[in-house]
Image (tube, helix red, strand yellow):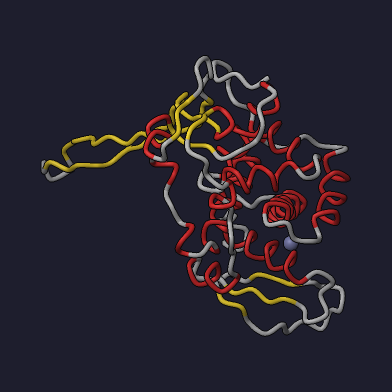
Length: 268
Ligand SMILES: [Zn+2]
C-alpha cells in the first residue's frame, strides 16, 4: 500500500515495475509529463485504490480545460520540489544567496477518470515522439563508430560522453539506451575509491534500458527483464540504485521527446 505517511520505498516500486508487463507503458502514456519517479507513484496509487490509469493534472488545470473533479474523489499525491533562498556570508564577509531545494509529497492531483465535464480526447495527452537524435544532442552525447574486435560486445560508452553500438548488435535500440544510461549514471567517470561494482553498474544500465523500452512500447524489454530478474534472485535492489535508475530514465525519456510535448507538468 502506498501511503505518503510512510517513507516511499523506491526500490520496491522499481522492483515491481520491472517485473510487471504492460503497466509501465500505460503509466508513461498517461503520466509522461511527470518525472519517472512520480509516474511510478501514480501507478502504484491507481493499483492500490482501483483507479483507472488516465492523464493526471491539478484541480485548477482540470477546471481550465473545462472539467470538474467529481464529488468525493480523493487526490493522488506526488513528490514535488520546493525551492527557497538561503542567505549567508562567505569568507570575505559578503552576503551570498543560494537556492536550495527539498522535496515534499503533495496531494493535489486528479486523474481524468476522476473528473467529468467537457469531452477531451485522451489521445491529445499521448506521447507522439521520441527522437534518438534529440536525446543525444540534448544530453551532449555523441554516437561514434564501433571499433571493438569483439563480436559479442553489443556496445560501449566512453569517458568523453561517446557511445558506440555494434552494427551487428541484436537489439540496437536496447543497447543505445543501455550505453546512454552508463553515461548518465556516471559509470564512465572514474571517481577514485567510489567505484560502483560492475554487476551493479550493469543492472542499473539494464534497468534504465528496460524502463525506456517499455515506456516507449519498443521491443527488447524481455531480454532486460530476464537479466535483471536473474540478478535480483540473489540481491535486493539497493535504494540508492533505484533512485539513480529512475532519474536517469527520466532524463533520457525527456531529452528525446519532441518540443511540442515538453510541458513542465511537474511544476504545476
Ligand atoms: Zn553495460
